[in-house]
Length: 234
Image (cartoon, rainbow, N blue to C red):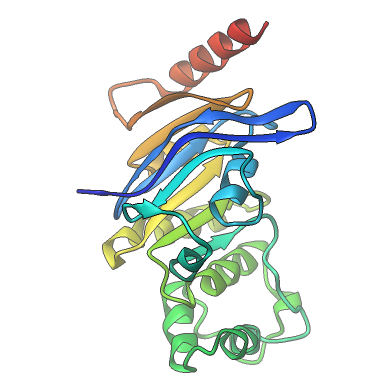
């Protein structure tokens, strides 16, 4: 398997603060990559950089073996923070707005609604959706352009156990459809059930990256990595 996305010594500075400090990650194609770290570790900054929302201070990003360019955003879908939903519209109407913006065929609406299991919501306005349904609609929006890479920032935030379970099943199904997923989280148990590989970020640096090993205690590994990061930066 090849890597769909690689970063080399990626840095992002905000004045004197190094939000990302020489981060080098490798994301394998058709896999789920879990980006772990405490709040404020630099996860969201990294994901915003990969989606073009933030310009890196230095370092390189490679997508499909080539230097990343804004044209690659046509192959990248993202849900960063809250889903951009018009709550007075239905799920179908929300997606219709996006197809018109991006010049996509209407046939994609039914296809992505089926993928996220929202095809039977009919005329129900999205303002009356549960949090889990809104998250799935946000993912449907991110999937409209048939991306090769889907980036999700804390996708289970605010969801109840049922919503988390539904989202877990959805994310696990995407690599089988040719979609690589990067998701950030600080909920270790969720990542353990979803991801194939993990990276652990603390204090703006990547301290650990490897395949998930069921024999390892992820919580113990995480705490050990974060503690060592704190000692290094002390």
